[in-house]
Image: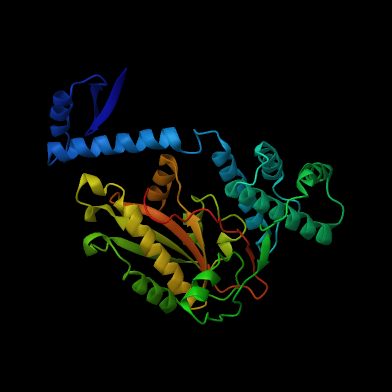
Length: 348
């Protein structure tokens, strides 16, 4: 078996069973290689990352934890669809059928992660049928079949998923920090009014005070108003259907890889960029501006497509997009209950 390492426009073939010294010598020949030791450590780091993700991520570990993750993900998809200003009638057949099958796979125990997943699924499904039964009347045959499958779990005490009204409508502000943090919710229903650019710029400036490794401040934000340019960006992201084009602005958060200096910092841009994005969300929330994170868990082809679309420099790493706008008066948001077993005290 042989592996390719790009060398300019040509591919230099390196056997997988190369010795450490031979690999180091080849690495030293790569364009831009400044330190053989650094290059080798960076390669080892990325291989270790790949191995860990390949072995332990939910895509590979088919156990009750990964099943719970699938249940929560699909439950949230139902919540998100219900939170739109105009949900598509009886949307999500494939998701609901898959969700029913996943819930049936869960063990019959009271472990917190299992109870959390089931309660979120049942809450989301309950609200789904309550909403469409009231709005549209009799359900299609496939939906009745799904309802019957979930009826088997009616004895569960807690049903925490679904939708609710926005906690602080009309630009109201929270009284204290605890209430402020707890009241931030992802908003997917907006008015037609445009958010003043100065307000978003002020929030982005405040986000720049976020912690960054050695204060290098590599995070940045592009602000794109609703229209053709925003649509060009949004078409490369998978989770904004039904509301992205209604947002006042789309924000593109990136991080400059030129601020990362060592092999150990190969993933630090995501940490710094995530801190920046969170502060930005809080700064928007403090101004009564609704926002919804649009994740960039992208494949290589998606990333290349966005870069070509907007001529994004190669040295900028995409962290996420954020849809922003003034919340609609009757905006609904997802419940998305919190897990209870995530906190650990001390080190064992």
